[in-house]
Length: 320
Image (cartoon, rainbow, N blue to C red; front, side, top):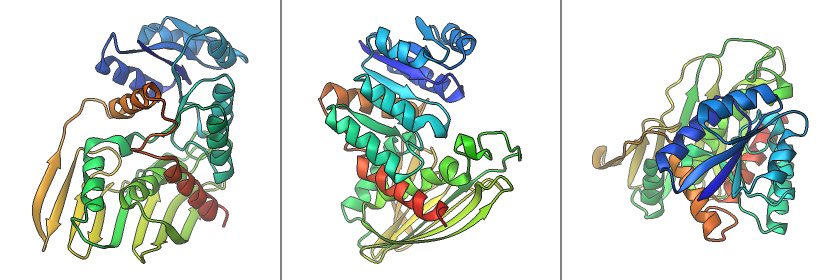
């Protein structure tokens, strides 16, 4: 039985527990949950039928010390991912870290270096990149089915109610459109294209709190392929992705989630892939279990360089 612990008792952790139940009893379980608020941890454990719960200022450490866990899923707010990851790794626990894994490249490098030094698996829990249709589109590109890559574009956004204290607009919580929405687009494209980045340019609009609420990013890759990425909190934007090559193009109707992609040549669809699923977290959880059971330190589906390059783009865009 593979045993997960969870740090953070919010809604995203509820989705994680649901995915674990879908994978099935006898294979995997959430054995413990920890929150800074003991009442929150207790309530979450009761709803999700989790045997062990921990809370208070030392709750995370108590869970790591007292529970026999195969891995820990970190689902706290963005500003705590780095310190929570280091805590787990220093207690010998492999980790899945909710996106964004880190808020800058230095943090990501430190997490990966510590994991390597301790021979522990770590991955960013970028669930959208583990979905079957994303892997299919990646294989089409890798197999040269659209020829040499020329241009890609993707966008996503929603209208967030302005509140300087919420996780979207509060800089102390790691707020901003790039960390919340843009990370999906950047890592989704980097994973699909699998090309070295040559240059990044951007335009950023900021809220009164100082966080970014709209990001328009241009990426030039080493082979001169250009990508355009647009993320915002100001309006609902369809999360569609288009990838163009010399011999065809691919459309992914929904890059944040979704379940299908289509390959085109001469403007006509020649191959369509679609796979339904109940909970998108299932695939990243199963991959994490497979990697840890196989003694791997990173997932070949979503390797560490993708996270590092995304964090480098964070630094370039938000450092302006």
